[in-house]
Length: 345
Image (cartoon, rainbow, N blue to C red; front, side):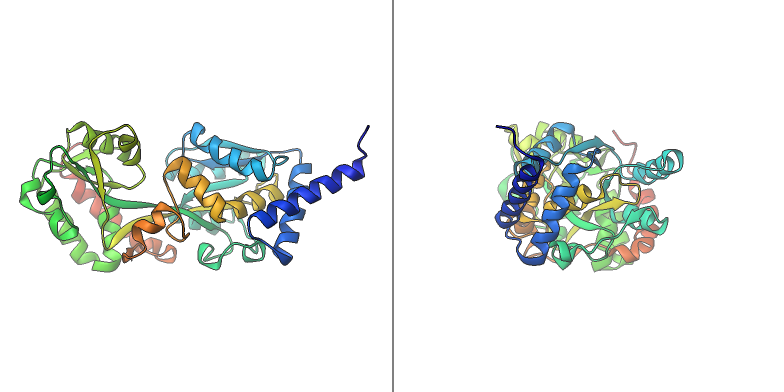
C-alpha cells in the first residue's frame, strides 16, 4: 500500500516529537525542535560540520544523533588546528558564498569570526540549551580540553607522585618532564594566579628542561612508552594510551586550567534548521555523552560527563572569552619562555 505524502509528514512529525520527549524537552522548545527536524530533513543539503577530531570518532557521534533524527544528514569535515578555521571560513565565504554550517573552535576563533560577521545568532535557550552553555547568542560551549598531570606509573613511585601545582617544579623532575610546545596551561593559570606569578612559575618550570612536543597526543604516548616520566598534558589525549594498557595515570589539578570548546553556526550555512537542531542536541546530556564517548573531550558544565566529575570540586582557571586579548598577550610572552627549553619533537 502506497503511503501518501501527508501520512509521511505525520510520521516524521510524530518521530520528531518522540525524540523531544526522549531528550526531556517539552513545551515550546519541543515544538520548535520538531519543526526544525522536519525542515532539516526536507533540506537538500547535509549539515556540514567543521571539527578537528578523526572521522571515525565523529561518525559515532553522528550515528547517535541519527538514532533520534534518522532523516537529518550530517557531514563531518576534519579541520585540524583551530587557528586555520577562521581563514578557511573567510576564504570560502568570499569565494563561493557559503561554508560549513557548524564550526567547532576555541573561544578566540569564535569571537574573532563573530567580529567579522561570519556567525549566525540564535535563541538557543528557546531551543532548550541551558544558559550556562551559551554565554552569548552566537555560540554554544560543548566541551573542554582540561589540563592534568600525566605520569608513567612504572617509572614514578606512588609516594613520589605529584599532588598538584606545588609539586610540579620540584628539581627531581629535571630531565624527566614533558610538555606541549604551547604554553596554554600556564597562560590560563594567569587568570587565577595573576600573570606575574604564572610567568614566574613557568620560568621555574623551564629550568626542568622539559621535552617539548608539537602535539599532546604524542606527548601522552611517550609518557606511556617511558620516554617521559611526567607531563602536563590534556585529560582527553591521555585516554588512548590508557585504553591501550600503557602504564599511564592522570592526576587532576586544582586550580584546573582548561580551554572551553565552542560550536557556532555560520552565516554561510546552507541547512540552518539542521545546524540548529544538531547543535541543540550536542548541548543535551545525550549529545554531550556521545561527543565525550567518541572524542574523550567532555563538557565541564554538563553533569554526568567524566570531564564534569574531574573538575567539579576544582577552581577553574580560564580567561573568559571577552578577555581573549589579555590571554593572547600573555600567551605570546609565555610561548617564548617555554620555547627556550629547546626544539619541539
